[in-house]
Amino acid sequence: MWRPTWLRSRRHDRKPTGFNPASLVAGSFLLMILLGAAALQSDWATREHLSWHQALFTATSAVTVTGLSVIDVQQSLTLPGQLVLLLLIQLGGIGIMTFAALMMLLLGHQLGIGEQRVVREAMNHTRVMDLGWLVKRIFLLVLTIELFGVFLLMNIMVPVDGWIQGVYQSIFYSVSAFNNAGFALTSEGMVGQAGHWPLALVLGSLSIVGGLGFTVLSEIRLSASWKTLSLHSRLMLSGTATLLLLGFLVFALCEWNNPDTLAPYSADEKLAISFFHSVVPRSSGFNMIDVGGMTMAATMFCIILMFIGAGTNSTGGGIKVTTFMTLVLATRAFLRGRSEPVVFGRTIGQELVLKALAMVFIAMMIVMLSLFALTITDPEQEFLDLFFETVSACATVGLSRGITSDLSDAGQQVLMVAMFIGRIGPLTLVFLLARPQLQRIRYASGDVHIG
Image (cartoon, rainbow, N blue to C red; front, top):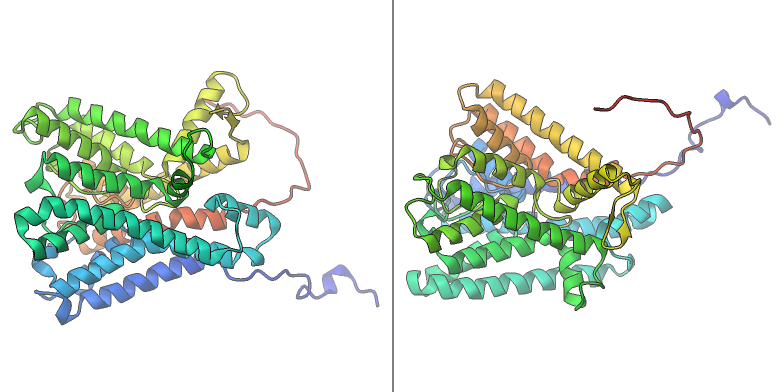
């Protein structure tokens, strides 16, 4: 029997949507934060009672592997409490990659063909069915790198602090560095070891490796040739090297004679600190000098590095190095009159350029809205300090100019939201925004005056 279209039931016309991956990822993070906060507030976890707000902020910072803190970890938390913090860092850093792989692979059959393509491209992995192989590979790689970091750090810390304390600190800092969390056992961070080349190299290297991303690490492990690496890996490695070199040069030049940072140290120590602080803004969050004492130029460049961040599918945050490099290459292509950017003999499609533009625009809006909120909640703070703190939270870096504890409860809540969004943002964008739709209508082109 024929019925008008408007009388037909739409119930049978709807396609099953399945679970929303973004909601699952965000929900898992939120649950982890709440459980972590409850554990940190327990009597057995603290030496001095923490308010629910303090526990929630600490748990949020740990799960989002940021490193901003309103407490002194060593003074406020007992050994069990510090182990809870370490577990939250591990789950928040490595767990997010593993959980992302689980969600994308498990939900692959429930997505459309176009969405499955996005999932494969996001992981850069074609063996969608081999879930166990992928997860085991991630865990094995992470365990190997962190244990190697522990071994190297033991050679530095055990002779100074003894076996028990030295081994514990080695484990804590290896996990914190690889996961780009930036949590330290002392409130002053690594200032007491400023200029220590072996420590700067080990912690810096762990942070760099953790920030490259599982995709790149997996390819490096399997490939012995630069030419056989994917375009993503080559762009990530070259971009990382460029940013590290620029960061080293800019920090050394701007801070060399600054009495509040590098001036009191020897030339060799200055170089070690400059190297370390070319790494930490990329999402690590450790510090060997007083960040609040840096010059205006170094501070602004540090903000740029924090905003760029680390790599896709890594333990770091930010807009990601490959996103930044894609926009740089797209700008170069425009200036040369080319329709698409070309690098390493490969073309980057317009769809990826548009995705990079969308990622950067959304990240900028998150930063601006968070900063706007902080200027309302804490108008007495210096604007540069608020700006620095905002970018650090949104990019899950953890560096601070020393105002985190001085912010009002409302201001700290703004940072918590910023850290949460900054950590789940890239995955949320993959699942929510990267959904190609068939265009049935093409409109006539119109002129818009740009610039």
